[in-house]
Amino acid sequence: MSVEQKIRSYILENFLFTNDESELNSEDSFLEKGVLDSTGILEVIYFLEDNFGIKVDDEEMVPENLDSVNNIVKFVAAKSQAA
Amino acid sequence: MATIIDNFFEAVSLNKDKPAVIQGSNALTYSELFVLSQKIAALLQYFKIKKGDRVAIVMENSPEYVAIYYGIIMAKGVVVALNNTAKKDDLEIWMSHAGASFIFADNIDLDADKNKRKVLIEYKNKKYKTIANLDEISEYDHLYQPMSFDENSLATIIYTSGTTGRPKGVMLSHRNLASNMASICKYLPIETNDRVLNVLPFYYSYGNSVLHTNLGRGATIILENRMIFPVKVIENIQNHKATAFYGVASTYAILLSRVKLKEYNLASIRYVTQAGGPMPPAHIEQIMEIMPNAKFFMMYGQTEATARLAYIPAEKIKEKLGSAGKAIPGVELEIRDRHGKKLPAGQEGEVYAKGENIMLGYWQNPEMTKSVLKDGWLRTGDIAKMDADGYLYMTGRRTDMIKSGANRISPKEIEEKLAELDGVEESAAVGIPDEIMGQVIKVFVVKKENSDISKQCILRHCKEKMAQYKIPKEIQFISHLPKTPSGKLQRFKLIDC
Image (tube, rainbow over all chains, first blue to last red; front, side, top):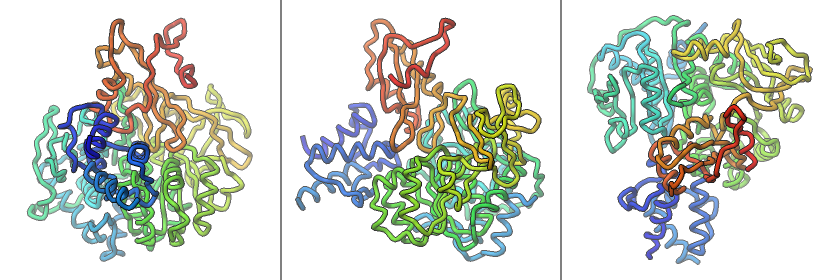
């Protein structure tokens, strides 16, 4: 399973409570679509740290890194490369 | 008494070219805000708004939101500002109950387009018809017909919960708003030169009071709606050299736990405020340590009292830590027993409040109004003790309302939605403690016999039907709910489960 698929499945299953892929486009903003709240974003971070062996710093918790599947995929790739 | 419109007009005349509201690269000066408000009012007049017509706003905070709010008032409409994260079902309950004729929306569920453009919708018999696109408002050339104001007339209805049978619409007059805003300005050091960073939604009474007090004083309001990315909030404070910040307990809990606050320059902040439920004293102390030059104001209030009832003066914050504060100017507070008799200092009872800020009543619900308004006094439903100096110390609530972040949620709202599911026999929602949000929702579900309904299926239904903040964080299946012999749910027995 690709990184994108893993992240999409996690968001669909845990925040949209469905397996229907059409419910979420990879470029959809979580904020605008009301997918995540303040506690949800933390859960996403724990998921990324547990599954991709990265550490998300406080200052990295910004929309550019975390506000869509695409943004997360790019962020995880950059972090993994830097590690 | 100067209404919020009088204060706004005065602020416009004194601060024409100064930014009134800023959001990212989108900003309106006081003159621009005034012109846009006039255009909104003229648009409503063109569509034949009548005095007292209810106009809903279903939009996230933005500079345009502010113009729409003031435009509705200038056209003598009644503002019904609704939670823009709510789903269509809840919105329709509120809009139908309010008898709204028009809706300003950027909510795609309500006929706005997919680009979330702001539109004006005519609402009749639960049918939506978009009649204007606000992006093109400059093309409308109708002229605003100025109107006079009666301070006793209804200015806004604020809905505090949304159960199907009992929507609670708090009716606030121009006098209520004017009185409470004037009181707040007597104890908060709001100045014309302030730049206020606001994360609070305007559809709740706290955010509403931040809007009117600061605009009335000619301050600049900087909007930041991305509280889930707290670094952005702090960067905005730093970049704009914000002088004031308002939050609820969870706002500060999030900032303290997810941002290295000490690494930012927050020296521009002159004062911070907190309201909307108790804040752990340890968090107050941490904020004061990080911002040693800022005055910290703890406040207490209710939508039924427009917003504010009590505060702790900044210089008393350490001495009175743990208190909800003393009465603000123009408000009387008493502790009474269950027969309505005033109790002396130190005894526990219900908080009663009196003042020109106390609501007119609940919209179209005289019975509920009668149950909380008596002889000019408001029964708050909060249980507290008062010390000899008049400071309140909260000890509980008479109601089962769940308080999560800035949101107050009736357990019945959740239970009604779960009852729509075939496999659910009955359910009970409770608030359980959460370090960040104060409380989060847990539901206990009794399945129907032979039902194989899953947690996922229940959560999916919640997601479709309810706003994000109402979705339970925990679901537990149980065989039966604890009840009294007469069948009344014993919700308290579930809280420790």
